[in-house]
Length: 218
Image (cartoon, rainbow, N blue to C red):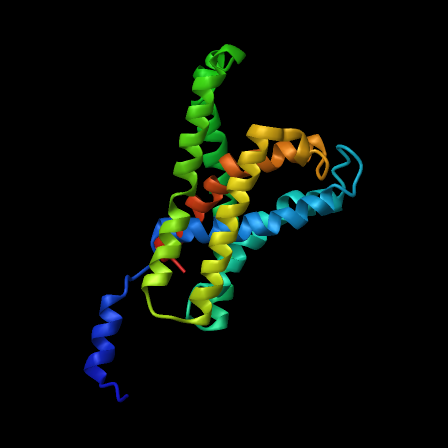
């Protein structure tokens, strides 16, 4: 089918100038979570609190690789431009993500006296609500890709997003019903890290990546 220059201009104008913040958030969340699982397996081969290169690579590497993977694959720009974007934004995203993570944790300090065993029922409801909020951008991102033009790229992203949703729900369900099951595969320190990543670290880095990418400075 022949496409006129006017059609191409109209199609280009219909596209957003920069990606949506929450769409990037969803991709960074999914890519990083999927990379984090083998990373934690690598970290589990080290001794407890060893902080060896293998341990640090396993727990920190997926956050850098997840952001880079999104910046390198989720754009039609030339390779050099995508590489420049990843190189410039990765340290900025890392610093901002850590700032968001610690800033939000400090903001919740006044609520710490309320976190007690007798409040478990209410805390469970709060945890479920937080989980739903954290996950909401992912099914939205899947829906946008299913509704849009069909492509291998969109299909791969959709599969990764759905896999991340299932992994998050699976880990959360096991933690609520039988936390000891995950203990058969991960040490206690790494299990705590995984739970913290789902509810805290991944959303912080996802929001940071979405914000800086939306600015379009690179």
